[in-house]
Length: 125
Image (cartoon, rainbow, N blue to C red; front, side, top):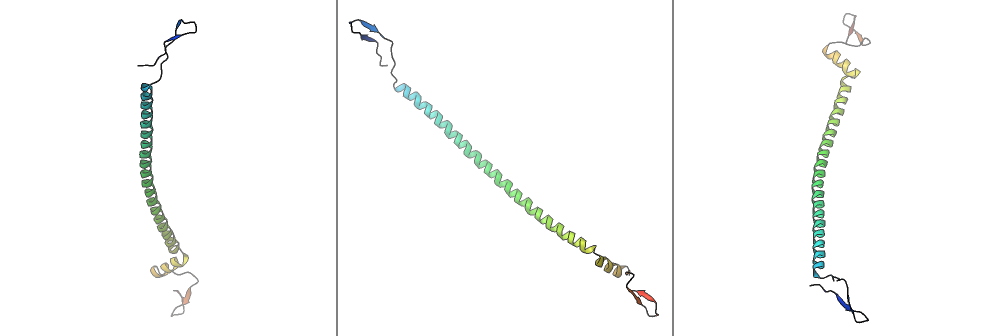
C-alpha cells in the first residue's frame, strides 16, 4: 500500500484534490538491491575471467620461453660445432698440412727442398 496525499482542505474550507504522490518504499529498495547484485555478479565474473585468462596466458608464455631457451641452446651448440669445423678446415687447407700430406702420401716435395743423393744427383726429400 502506498502512502498518498489525495485530499487536502484549503484555506477556504473546500476540498482540493491533488495528484497522488507515490512514496518510495520497500519495493524500490528491493529492485535497487537486485540491480546491485546483478552488477556485482557481472563484475565478479569479469574478474574471474580475467584471472583465468592471465593464468592461461602465463602458462603459454612459460612454455614458449622454455622452447626458446632450448632453441638458443641448440643454436649455441651448432655455432660451436661450426666454429670447430671451420678451424679444422683451416688447419687441413693450411700450406704446411698440405705439403706434409703430399710428402708422406705422394712423395711430393717443394722445389727448394732438394738434396744430393748417394750418386751425387739431386733428389727430393
